[in-house]
Image: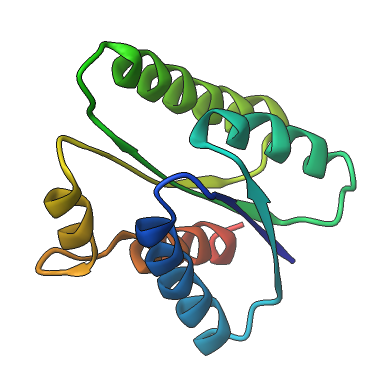
Length: 134
């Protein structure tokens, strides 16, 4: 079972990333459950809480952090990136990173099914590759 944790902030982007991840998991016959959180900052704690169920083989973290007029974006991006990496190592559960950290909406759209593909699909493929090697 795969857990997918999705930020509802910048939903226009995260919905496209989620659809890409679900498509790949379904094509490869993986079961999954989707959980929503308010923003990317909440993704690591949700994954940690879900990991206590001991029913998940891996997780996909989906979010979108777009640069604003303040430094807030940098603090959130660093905290979330570090939190997910730390959790994956501590829990010994693969967590793939499909959290876009971009300067503007156009960059996000290009990575959520636009000219640079769908990073949700790529994240699901990366998780499957890890799981097949275990």
